[in-house]
Amino acid sequence: MHFEFGHIALILTVTFLVGLLATRLRQSTIPFFILSGIALQGVVDSHSEVISFMSVFGIILLLFMVGLEFSIANLVRARYKILVSGSIDLLCNFPLGVAMGALLGFGMLESLMLGGIVYISSSALISKSLIDLRRTAYAETEYVLGILVFEDLFIAVYLAVISGIASVGAPSWEGISLAILKALLFCGAMLLLALRGRRMLNRILGHESFELFILFIFAFLLVASSVAMALGLSEAIGAFMVGVVISETDFRERVEEVVLPFQQFYAAMFFVTFGLMINYDNFLGIALPGLALVALSMLTKVGTGLWTGRIFGLSKPASLRLGLTLIPRGEFSIIIAGLAAIETGRVLNIADLTAFYVLLLAVVGSMLMKDADRISRRIFPPKARPKQEVPSYAKPDG
Amino acid sequence: MKQVFETDLPGIGKKYTIETPQEERFVLVAHRTGRRELFRFRPEDETPDICLEMDEDTARKMGTLLAGTYFETAPEERTSLVMKEMSIEWLELPEPSTYDGKTIGDLEIRRRTGASLVAVVRKDRVMPSPGPDQELRSCDRLMAIGTAEQVRALVAYLCEGKACTLNLDTSH
Figure 1 (cartoon, helix red, strand yellow):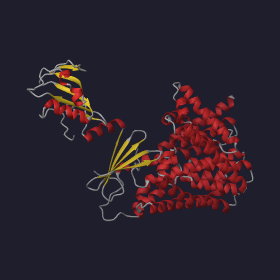
Figure 2 (cartoon, one colour):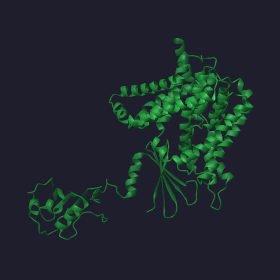
Figure 3 (tube, chains in turn purple, cyan):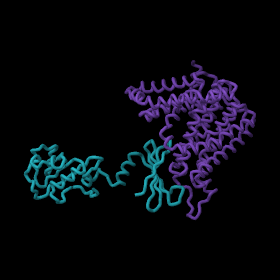
Figure 4 (cartoon, helix red, strand yellow):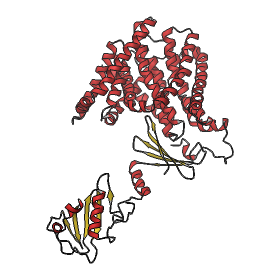
């Protein structure tokens, strides 16, 4: 036990220092946490049960927060916009990953996973950057966020289905349809709870005692995750749906406030653990297909932006910015690779590719987001009006 | 008045857009954290040329200033509050008034107008919740409460056609 304690102390210290470096460099912490995991390989035991528990708990809390942010009412209100732009995004990006997987000789399960990894943008990274870059009022921003809502919803169901398939072993169409059916039934039951159980939940959450409040949240979270796992789905869908259920109560903000510190801690542990699992010797071998995938998936996201912009009548620069903004990949791509690796108990070669892919796209994507204004201005120069440089307040200087 | 467009920014907050007569667009982004950002887009511009950022408290103060309803330093300026169903009005009995020396009961204020007097201010003395035997004098300042209609009836009754409300807001 003492041994393990020392290991975790080491992980935390290294992760803190690396995180500090990332903030100094004004970069997202996610790729840096993965790097710190890679650096710690051989020093700490990646098969430690404590570490893998923290990492799974990180996934659960990440998905819980996504569910909590998710608003059924918002989805219904802007359904046309979200469904159309979200479908374009899915259509442009998911097949690329699947095709690439098939081309690299991956099996069906891994190709489907690569589809998800390539498709899903990083909500965390993008939302934060949009705020930091003061781009919330731009015409395309509501479409970016709408697409992220669609992706969040998709990924919850997708994770359930994919780990359902992964746990069966050899995927078959039968297995896939059964997994989808189970996922839909589970979501339906939880939605019913969200609508019918609101009053009861409000009463429970309204209890004065803070310790009971947090105990209830975690109990609820783990019960739903266990039920989802017992059904052969993923704990992630359980956590996501608990988030959705709680977001319908009057205590959404309080829950968010209380759970956020836990989420940040355990999510960091998850990213580090993912780094621990990576076999970076493989990076050289996968560099070529990895780079091709990076380049192609930047193009498909730009394509998503241009197509969406055309349908909704956005200007060309705005459409281009929309596409560029969607490029960063991050937490979800890693969750897909990490979760499947954890659940199947074998490190799939897809994990290395994902690490390579996310390390590049988290960094390059953030840089492209920062420069989206300048790039779109260069490609589609504004006519007539006196030239304005990027407004000084939009420069990322803190 | 131009319309205000409201858009959801999932995960961030809400966006409100208003177009000025000069065809500029003012965009307010209200973050869920309470932070507000105000942007100005020049006509046909895609990127804002002005951006203001404020915390919630500053935004609220600024809002009252912008709306011209700032209370703190000039409480006398606005003496009528119109809420959904209820109206509160300050009025002053004319000098001289035919009602000088009559009580509230004598005047049958509630029965005739429906409005109630909730306070009588005479020079520096305040008499809250006056009863039916409270005497009224010329130059008394009265606080009345009721529906907008009841209060109007009261003003017409007590002030006998003279301008007597202390309300500087003439929009109703």
